[in-house]
Image (tube, rainbow, N blue to C red; front, side, top):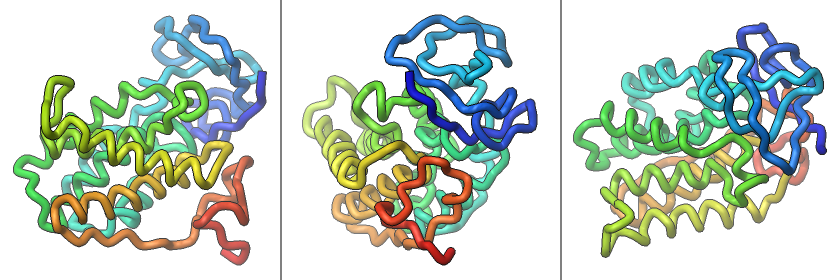
Length: 244
């Protein structure tokens, strides 16, 4: 088993590590059933903290209403700035499966704000959030596909109206996911949901621009999370600044 940290404020008032007690998480290569300390449902789990506390993905990603309300009211065109603003909202932790939903929702919002054809943003955001929540926490390490990249693919699948039986458009969302995975894997690990989210959004902004002929800004402000991330890559991260 491997010690990792998960920065996640929660009902116990903890901003780092376990939502309940603040201790580091311990990841396992085996999935077992554990009782969630918040909703008390039995859920498949590959991680618990050193004290044995387990919080399921549904409870971990409980800040969806605030994120969706914020995005629906935003006119920000820069997808990266919008992502960082969303990540500062209550209920969004340093790492966690909520990022798998935030990425596609941010992309859809910025795309609409840049003039992209999104008729009903609220409906698209609701669908993107639901799809993102299907991607489990730890997907980057356990499934071999980072949830941020999958989130970008979710955005593309909604815009393309893709389904498993779609013909011509079937490959388009997967091509974006592949581009995002290439960008994320080129930097390496361990995981950082802020870094991978930004890499996916940068890549998706370029892809959406090429596919739809719409200019989507994606700025590169320096990271403000390095002090909160025990596994920070520091100089290996493209967003790191030693002076910031």
